[in-house]
Length: 415
Image 1 (cartoon, rainbow, N blue to C red):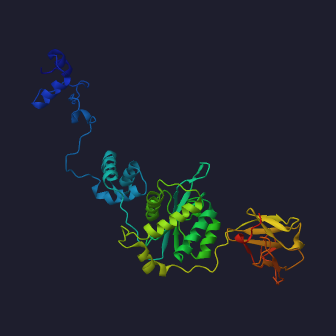
Image 2 (image 1 turned 180 degrees about the horizontal axis):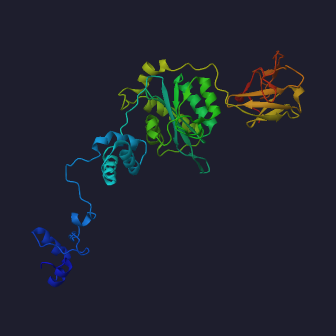
Image 3 (image 1 turned 45 degrees about the vertical axis):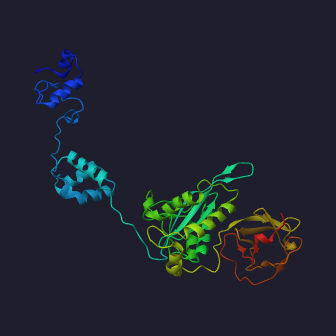
């Protein structure tokens, strides 16, 4: 059979080529006929053998041999962390360090490091009161009486030291919604952490950048009001805020999975009860402390003091006083003094207060304000007019003077 191919042997003996290959491998069979060109040293190996799968003219490194790249292991790891490809690493090693090996040696070394040696990073723990991580996730759906479903978003705020957290569900991820939830979280904690760490969500970051991100100006003002710094994470680096990433999953799996609610308020009441009875009472796996006890004893005393007033996260617009002496704001009606019938007033409002601003004539340097008494008539309100001296007008492009006091939305029953 010497000098014959496996195909010919199988055909002459009436057996399969696999049987021929097994018999030849079992003993010191004859040298296999070369399928390559004349003069080639590559012999045809049996199908499935290592020789058949090895690429031509590429010697396999002996087991236990040391790569020529080993002396440069630390350098290669650093360049991989920078995101450089094997070709660029090879070029740098040759040009800067006199590397004498081949490109394939570098490529194999890089593949081995990428597969078996993940880039190291440390778990970052912070001092009490230093940091809160924030992130949005998908909340439980709101199902109306007619069966229609509406998607919700749950914001999770986690104090990084004690893992004490606050959760709130909203319909949208706007800047106003984010500010509203963060403010509620601060008042829930009874203090303000020094640093807020979000990802690069649009409500917080207009343009992501590792060194100088373009922050939303309204959110920046909110942080200045509460004395906190905003420090977004690096884009596409969820491990930089791993505490809240796991926290969002914890809320979704433990508190909301499989549930539906009829309103946002019902879902938020459920979350508050769950925080108090479940999340706060657990022994955290990393800190090995009960969350609520650790928070009360260690972290809450280190939080920054709350300001005297909430952040004026307002909307604004012009309103014309109707003939019955009312202006419409946020689907409610507010009465104003009768001398303003038919006049256009500038109104600023948020979820807590409505402020009416009176327009100053160009020649005047001052004006007057008016405020509300708490008395009501037929579900409405009664104005108490005053004339304080405002001095010079505020530096506002529209030249409007601030009102002396404000009215809360719940006082107005007229619709």
